[in-house]
Image (spheres, rainbow, N blue to C red):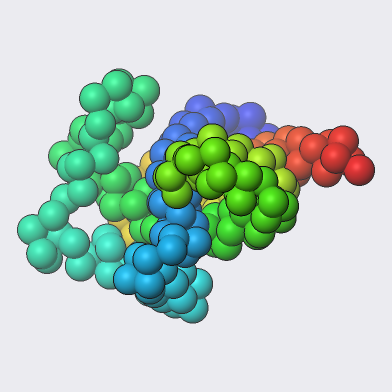
Length: 232
């Protein structure tokens, strides 16, 4: 525990950066997953094909491969993912505007990968909505988009809180890969600094890293358990 106390600031900074990465990636993943789920239940075959292709691709490709193509492939194509530096969001997360693009790129890779799983979780919620409600909405003259927005999706999100929450927990753990793809300052990069550069013993360092991830995942897991019990 002495190491955790002596180098608390380093662990704290790594934790905060990892937390920021997960928040940004989680928000984008929820947006992508919602769009993909909407495409998958669309009455238009081309849109359904696009949604199905996205989910099939990213659910069956390892995250390491996705990270590799996004972090190294996009810069080779001339993109630094600066579109993620959204006004307002870049104030809350200053790393989005820093010239080193690894925060944006790793967040994008995590989001694109996780969005496919969010899509399937949300689609299960859409399928749980009684078909009669959608039919009643159509009888009232609501369009497909209005039907989804006002009738189906609000109920689908409530029904799929637990599976989507489980996907977000998995995404937080998957964020450990970010340090291996150039993101400086996250929890895993902190471990590299302490063990490789300073020669600190591995076990105390990784105990500290584990505590950081547990602080993020356990409260979310407890919340999901309470939500699930509340629905029974």
